[in-house]
Image (cartoon, rainbow, N blue to C red; front, side, top):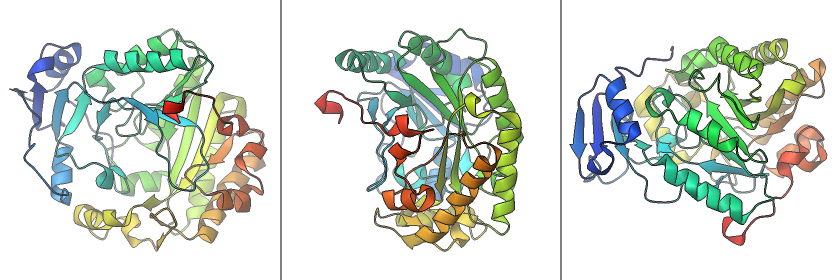
Length: 373
């Protein structure tokens, strides 16, 4: 299903009194065709218990603007036993307006509303403090953990602010991770070459059946090409790989689509992962997508990290296929595994992450203040 316009996406709009006149709130009120309600507390705050599938779907249609009172910056939570790629996250909101069937947010978020944090200046002040405390740490910071980095950028305008801020710290890396093609707010902006525009991609068949309200594969690849042409580094996440009939041909075609457009030197990294989610997410998947989702039809097993996954032999086969397809075209494509155990690394690469030259730098330990470890 194609990406939908934000103009009429949200059915309810709530803005906390403390940020009613903020730049973001004014921008949202101007953009959306939804009447804004001025509130003094989070809407539906009396709701308790785990969200049902219907309630989670409703949360994607309700938008709440408020300043964030906690920490914005933290180490990527990763998964138990996985090889760590030294990734950090800067959370500027919660919930996604798109609707992927396999999205982990369905079990991670228990909020009846989507939220945009209006105080990005506090987030950057926190980040600046951490950078000054760790002046030599080459942090790689992503903004797409609990919210898509760019799909709501027409409402926030945060991408241009981040590009400008990171230009002052060229030893840092910022990653915009997205399933949209929304790059227009920053694409012509001066930058330091340290903002990576990364696209989560899958074969178009998977996009159509599982990644609802996202940009098409061709739109994402076109946006990546334009980003690269404007000297923004690009990256790709083939994650999650989904097992379907004819999966080898589908993922071979996907690799061909990438390698026909990009040389290895133009891509900062390519991460590969397989379908996985917590067991408790199965009920909400059934409620929201019935029996149609491939994620529901898949044969998955409980792994040591407590998530349902394909068995290791199948995962290794899938990874080996994609990696070999890249290597056939050029062995310099920087491919690595995401959220996978050292055992899977060894069975796939016959090496640990630090022994793979094209991506070893991502896995080198970063010296930092103890409170961030």
